[in-house]
Image (cartoon, rainbow, N blue to C red):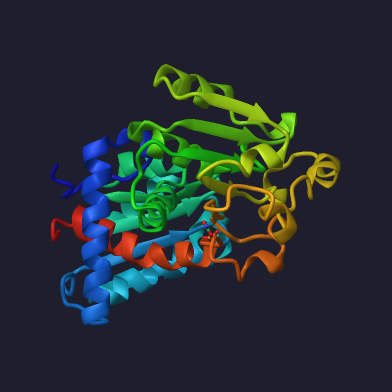
Length: 308
Ligand code: CP
């Protein structure tokens, strides 16, 4: 599949062949970085990195990817520093920036907002997180991490823990792993934060066995445990956040009772859902996962600009 000019908005839009091609190009990007830290593959390109919600990993790894490919970024790092603060619509922002750059990466708080921008711009748009919707580049780097840690994406038991309702990373990961015949998805969350029913129904249509639980010990029997933060910023009622925060705290003694080969992942940032005494365990993959974001984002930028 030729990715040139293609928007990357949701993992639900991608096929198994797409995922495998992206994994292959990501591997090549990792080799490239290890050979020459900055290439000239995209030296004639300018990339817009528009972030209207806070970010450390996604924005900085996209910017690093742009630099490592020899391209140049133009950046907005908060809604307050762009004309969004004056009430400009997403479509108008996209139509404007479209005239400046070769590709647009965007994070903003409205579910579906990246699609609005992609529809308004001719340049390819990458969704860097749209509210409680999707975070496809996170899921793709998660897949690359799983491939590195487990050697395969096929037939894995994947547990997702925490805020599955608002957690765009686990929405994207559910669709991303679906073509690889998961043995089971274990959705571990308080009832109020369980995976949205439309996503559960989509997974069941794909014949993926689903277990819903509140017990993290069940999640610890999986091949992958994917912890997530309870996201204060998504709650309308602060009292509900106060009640649910701290629902799950994974610590070393809990990990030691689970599957000894489990891979522990987290999109980060964490608050307190993984204790720091887990960080030194060989199973703790979350910082390796964050570092893989650069290779994956290099791959996507090269692919959508027709250079890979
Ligand atoms: N995983 C992730 O999206 O992190 P940031 O919010 O720091 O970009």
